[in-house]
Length: 465
Image 1 (spheres, rainbow, N blue to C red):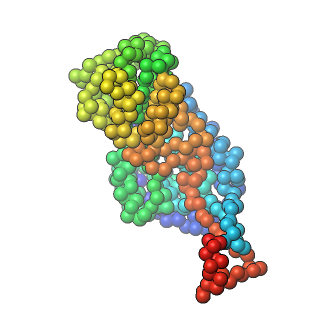
Image 2: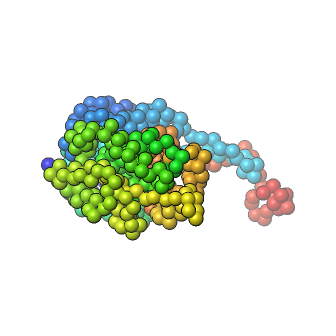
Image 3: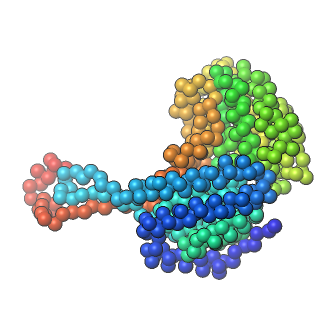
């Protein structure tokens, strides 16, 4: 199946229609927004089966994994906004200092306007539709641009959106990077982009022409630290799950391991055992093991294995775009597998010890010498985990776990530096598509003369200020 490019004329037509619709004020009423969220929730239930079938066709993603990592997250986000939208959008009174008497101060949450969401292929439902929840709750119009690399998913989502929303309000456009460029050439009130840092730079460059704000959810090489104090069996189980979830094609997947030499051999054995517990003795036959999205991805990720010192795994099958979960020992610091985001089930293992510097100091030096990652994972004593968190920087992270920080809608999700800018989930999703407008309302029953020229009683005014 091949996705056809939406024409530039069609894109421009949708853009103009959405501008006019937003200016009409139709999206401003909170009752309208809540009604749209209810419609969205109903659509997710109605289209669940078709969405999951499309995910299986494009990615070999099982129903269980599709529901847990895609459907349930979007549905949870919708419900959270339905439950709290009135509170989150309410005009808020703020403290007013005496110098502004007789004024009152407020913060008003208002929609940014006409917005665009460009999503990647790895979680093509969650990463396209979760931002849509925030846009609807904020009162914006939205153009959604799914990935052409998952054509069945993209087509099903387009059909669902067409059935659910007026395209003057929410519309889907399809196509390759030429379509992305046509979209980026237009002026938006916000661009929400999820993808690689290299593409994020292009999005930011295009947005700069119009001073358009951006939310960039990018990626990078997220380290996984395993100290000698870690519960190795539990660490191996959680890391094996996180690395093989979506076959490692996850922006917050642990990318490489920094492990204390005293527990390396134990971890390698435990990791292999947990892979078999999760996916069976023949991983290729597992119904829950996702494939590489296309041949280019397969070739890139499998190239990391060629000539490597393999500790576990290593089997590939180009005919199925299958790559077995693979541990690689001690790759060079400047090798492609240690400088490029892997985005697959290949796992470099870097061994550190306590010689010269303590393990935690070496971990800190290693991580901070590189770009800031999207996630940071530490396994060991919690107090040492907090030390590692404090001495490094990342978009988010976990102590004695991986991935799970994305599952809590009550904490923000986003990157920092090379791994992104801005954040969303829960209330932060609404705020991502909103402007916090400060308003002073001043009473007319009195008009103090002190602020007017020629500034009488200036010494008194100076003392008050």
